[in-house]
Image (cartoon, rainbow, N blue to C red):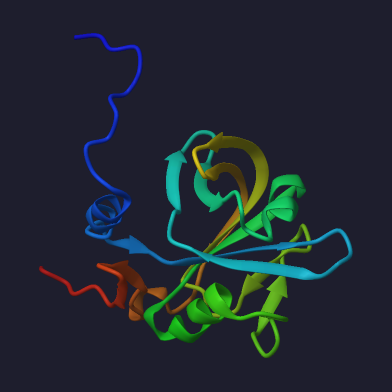
Length: 172
């Protein structure tokens, strides 16, 4: 059968969220700088690789997010991959009102965007394209620079699964 559009879902939003929560994801903080120079950062678990050549990544943001206008219009952002010992930073950028960067050490990238000190890895991206889909915008970033924390191999990534945070456990 070659349907021209998707069938009407036979589940509610709670069932959909529950099913999605079974997929474990890494946790990131996406940072940028507003036109007035203020720093913006949000926690996101919607990060994924897209392409090696050219180097592309993607992430998504709710259309209703207060930071949407800045992320939509800015030329650059940084995806900071968090370690399990950075749970406090994750929660700060997910829930805190006001200056989320207060007391959080960072350095500025070549584009003037914050790279969080201690992040397992980071990707400085040109804001290549944006796609409005449903209640989110999908951002595709072309990676201009990236790095890995010197002790990344000795640290554990922060993982989100089943509505809570975890540390992955090696099976091998």
